[in-house]
Structures are given as structure tokens and as C-alpha cells.
Image (cartoon, rainbow, N blue to C red):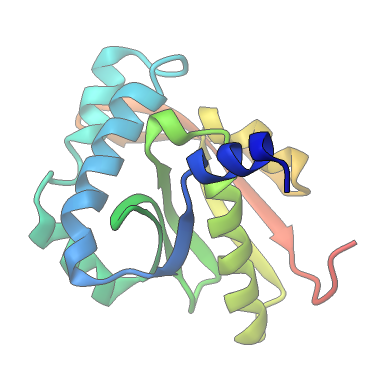
Length: 174
């Protein structure tokens, strides 16, 4: 390894992926809030984002309770949760997927989805589903997800557009 590539390698943040722990819940609340308020700014109005962000509290206890409802996978950098995915294994559906806005586009969400897909394959599922925001739909379509159409949901009195997507799972990726 050359000196230049060694120093570039050292500067790149190391992301670890694992199941969520109770101590991740406070970070999850912040990731959710900032992903909605900052990350979705180009796709939704401020009023829509405020309504969306108000649906789930910014309290660790609320997110810790969700660990009992969903299999929650987290991306951790320097001991802090910087992205997470909540998976309803029984329904083979991604409930939520959020990444810290400044880390968006670096493959964290994609890697969380790959881990979720593997988990579902191990459980015998043939498909995975998600209701995706406007900011996520094109990325998912590029990864082979089938767009089943748009739908409108109400959050805090505001209508938000999202998309239903599905992907067939294969044991061997091509």
C-alpha cells in the first residue's frame, strides 16, 4: 500500500453492521429526525417534513420499544448509530430505513438492505417489500426493486407521497 492510499484508507470512516441494542435507541431517534428534516428537504415541503418527523418521538425509550416489534439492523461508526433498518420478518417488509443525511449516498442504506435480504432468505422468504419515500424510490429501482405504484399517506395532517416496491430474493445474486 502506498503512503497516499494508506492515509486515505485511515481517513475513511469504518462502518460496522449489527443488530440494534438498547443503547442505539437515542441515536436512532436523531438519525430519523435529521434524515427526515434535512435528508428529505429536496423532496418534501417543510410542513410535510415536520408532520412526518412528529409521528415518532425523539426519545430513546420509544425507539427501544420498537426493537421488540421489529428486527432492527444498525450501521455504526465510532460507536454511534448512523443508519438503521427496521424489518418485519413475518411480513417480509422493511418498516423503516434511515441514514444520517451527511452519509447518504455512501452505500450504508444499501448494505442494510443487503443484510435484511439475507436474513429474509435465511427465513425462507422469496420477496421483500417496502413503502419508500420519494428520495429512495429511484435508488431502489436501480437495485432491481419493482415499483408497484404510488400511494398517499397522512402524517400529522399532511399528505405525503410514497411508493410501494417489491423485490424477488435470490440465493445467488447476479
